[in-house]
Amino acid sequence: MDQEEISRLCASLFIHSKEEKLWSVRDSLKESAGKKLDLCLVGKVLSTKHVNREAFRAVIPKIWQMKLEIEVVQDNIFLFYFRNQGDRFRVLAGGPWCFDNGILVLEKLSGTGDIAKVGLTRVVFWVQIPNAPFLCMTKEMSEFLGQLIGELIDIDVGVTGECFGKYLRLKVAIDISQPLKRFLRLELTKGEESLLLLRYEKLSEYCFHCGIIGHSHQECHNRKCTDIRASSMEFDIGPWLRATNPPGQNKTFGHQRARSEKLHDRNEGAGISEKTNDRPSSTDGSWRSKFMGDGSKG
Image (cartoon, rainbow, N blue to C red):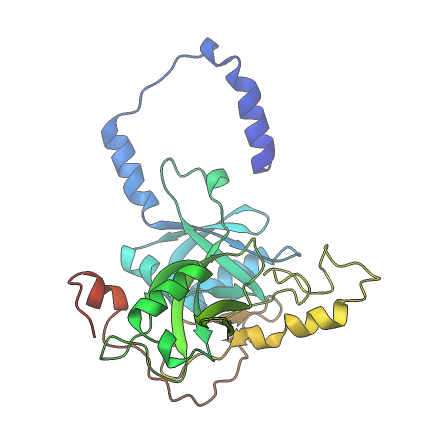
C-alpha cells in the first residue's frame, strides 16, 4: 500500500472516526519520539527508474563512512536513522549526494514526521559564477545575487570577508522541481545588460531540454519528437552547467556516484575530473558566523 492509498483510506475513515475513542498521548512519549526523529532524514533518489534497494542500503553507508539504519519507505524513498546528530550534520553538509547518477534529495522530519508532507524538492548546491565582475564580488553584492538564485545559505569568502577571486561561489538551496537557472541578467551599468553564468558543483543527471534535474534529454516528457529547437536547447542547457569542485574541498564527503551493478567494485567518486583552480577554499569559518553576528565588514 503506497502513501496515496493510505491517505485516501484515512480520509474515508475520518468520516466515521467518532465511533472510536480519542486517545491522548503523554507529553513525555511525544518528547522521546521527537528526539528520535531528530536523528532521522528522509531521502528520495530522483530517477526515472527504480533503484536497486539492496545495493543502495549496502553502498550508502560506505560512501558516508558511518553506521546507520536505512529503511525503505516506498519506491525510491528511504528513511535514514543516524546514531548521533554529528553524523546527520556531516551528511547534510557534504551533499548533494548521488546514487546511480540520480541525485539524493534529503530533508529533515518535523512535526509528527509525516513523510507524505515532506516536499523533497529542495537541494543545496555550491553555485559558481565564473564571469562575475569584481563589482559583484563584495559581500553585499554576493548576498543579493544569492537571493536571486534561491535561498542563500553561505558565501565563500576570503580572510577579508569579501569574495574577490577567480570566480564567485555561493551556497544556495534551490527548488529542483523547477528548471535550473542558467544565468542572471543584471543592469550593472545604466542602460547596459550584463549576463552572469551559473555553474553547479556536484550536479548529477539533468535534462538538456527542460533543465530539470532527475531525467535525461531522451526521457523528457516535455520534448516532442518533432521539436526543431532540440539542437539549440542542447546548446543552451548543456554540460557547461556542471562545475568542477575547487581543490581542497573534502572529497570523501562530496559527490559520489554509486552504481548498483558490481556494487563492491563501483563505490567510486564522481567521475568529474578536478582541474587546477587558484581560488582558495574558505577554511576560516562561514560567511554567516563571521559577519552576520557582529555586522562587521571585511
